[in-house]
Length: 166
Image 1 (cartoon, rainbow, N blue to C red):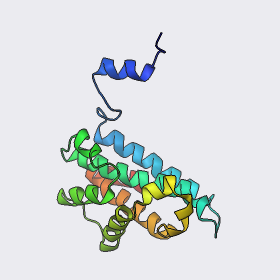
Image 2: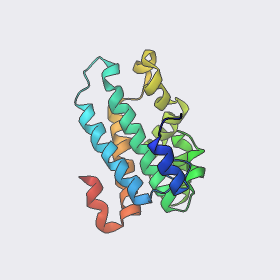
Image 3: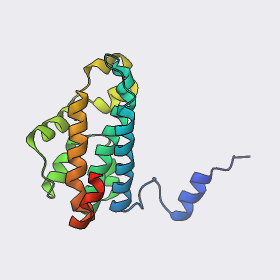
């Protein structure tokens, strides 16, 4: 007899194949906010000279950036399955997002491209031997905070901008 899988039952009732297919841009944005807050909290746990202690910060920061860009792409009409096909390519997301009105500083754009080129998401998750090769903590923090700040008004409108800055 097959074990009960609540996830499959819920997903088949809803007629959805993937988690997040029914999420609104605002829900994805709110999730990104939670990951951003978590990354800032985890940053405090890192120790100087010990790159592996920064891995949880990096993972949550990169994931938050991906979620912010996903929220904007959803808002701009991209289908969830199109976004999913991008896998963890932050640069592809960034190019699509900037084409729809997101304006980021040159250094932030370069860093997002570098994150994709170096596959920092995968290195952070699976490559402890490469931890010392990842981008600088202050650069990743700046990229995360700028993406959050610039996406917020596009998702929330001008009135909601203060929410993401907190």
